[in-house]
Length: 239
Ligand code: UDP
Image (tube, rainbow, N blue to C red; front, side, top):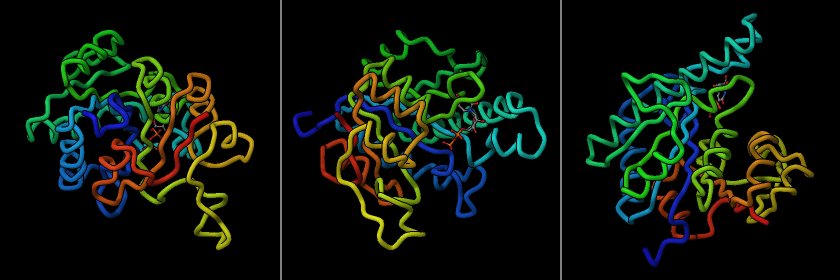
């Protein structure tokens, strides 16, 4: 454990990380590569908590733009995150990594309800804990869930695994050739500069609770391991 910078991490995976090339749905071979990567980190003795998104299946905002009531559409999104969590659990367990899924909305036949103290106990017993169902409330995101649960379990850092970028840029590098990547920032910089990293609720929660955030490219194999070991990839956000 000496070569590890973060001993308890909150990994935020967007739903897209579990999808196939079309970016939609659940693609088991892709999940397998994700699980393999996580197994390497687990083998180092790092305590891993995961918040998984649902954007590969459903986004509440998109549903409401098409005429659904927003809160109802958001509940559909929360259920989507639970499907992803079960798929990820399946893959991790098939590789011998013990896991527990905890849901913010009770579904006792398939997962434990979210109980903070129990989640911490699982981590201490070297079980990967997957938090599913978001916060359990509409109008929030899974980024906010990651910041909230990270504070609750006292995580050393939030690892924001990104699929389309390798860090935080001054502008969208696909649109602005002058965009530059930041190696480090403060949480306040993100808010003041209006940078699109995660929503402001998530940013302010992690700022208020002083939780460092590392934004990195998840498409490159081995990056989670590098981040956990403290290698300077991506963008680190701290005070
Ligand atoms: N969601 C919600 N409350 C939460 C977390 C998620 O209502 O606390 C819903 C929301 O509709 C969101 C969807 O679940 O669009 C999927 O989550 P998110 O968009 O954060 O997934 P990601 O973009 O990370 O795949």
